[in-house]
Length: 497
Ligand code: ADP
Image (cartoon, rainbow, N blue to C red; front, side, top):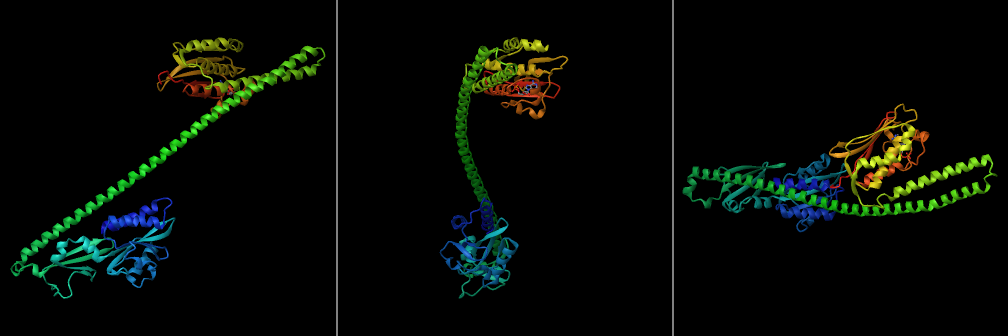
């Protein structure tokens, strides 16, 4: 009985745990059928509306008379009162035994199902006493003993026949208490007289001992049965968990597939965008060349006639077209990374750095910068032309932003080990960058106000650096403080990884 009642409570808990819970007839019938077949003993499992009306019953056969009954108006207070208590205190209740509408003596359990702080309905278990006795007591006990079952002082079951001369109260008998949630029953067993010849009956000590042993055995059997029910419940629970987990895994797989499709779409869109940028940049170059060409023609043909003011304006136009050309070239370069690729090779980093320093030598000398390059630099792996571009952009920035009034401008280039990876760095003691801009400066066209005052630029250089480094499986970052210089770091994937 304990298991049956616990299972009913468990059923109610599982029901409301689902979000959102499904309080449909279909779901009720599925649950009820499952419980009815797995835990024999129920006379009925029913659904009662919050208003107290019995709406659905299982099994229909034998319980149909119960449909439509209003439990809170039940004629018998033994059913009515506990039901009202279940609704008021929102708790599970068991009624005392009463005459059932389905016939016979039995009792009800009412379990309110609460969701969103409101009662959604009641789960009602109906148990007929006779059925419970038939299931729980062994057949041999039923045939060998007269049985009396009491709830408080009320006789709720007996197998004594009317015609039979009832056993006397003081006859030899066994008394047992049976407990389950909300109930205590008293069981009396009287040996049937004709089973025992008079001489055996006279040996009452032996009989008492026999009864004592059988009581102990039935107790053991009861515990064994209880334990088995517990294991069964645990197994059911584990099976439920496994199926839930399987469902979650399947959902995860589905999402992964969706994500893959989205990523492929995204990659296609990226390629499309880069191709677009590239073609637009090419197209923009043509009008610039035309403007520059006609400015040249204007100067050539009307050089003497051009007044001083007009010459000034022409110079502005020239500067602007030049800047535009630089911008377009940078954008074209950015769109080419990863799109137009050449074979990756291994080469010495020292040679590459030397090449870049030589190219930037005029600016280094003009600003009187002292450059230090670390000894014993390693070999690196990648597209050499692109890595030269990274170094060139970082070094030219270090030169540009070294600061106009820097008394001893210095730049240091080297490699350090960090978490088993080679980290290449370019350090300067220039104007530095505030921490809030550490991410922003790697975006296209982002130039800081401090930089605009000092030098010209397009704001694309660091975006190119980031794109190339990431294309090589590496990462770029910086450390800096305003007025104390900046150090840019980057990594590249090794050949074997
Ligand atoms: P550009 O140099 O053409 O402006 P970049 O993308 O190379 O564009 O750099 C973006 C911005 O980051 C620069 O405008 C400047 O404000 C800042 N920056 C880059 N390198 C340094 C550096 N070494 N020291 C100080 N500021 C820097």
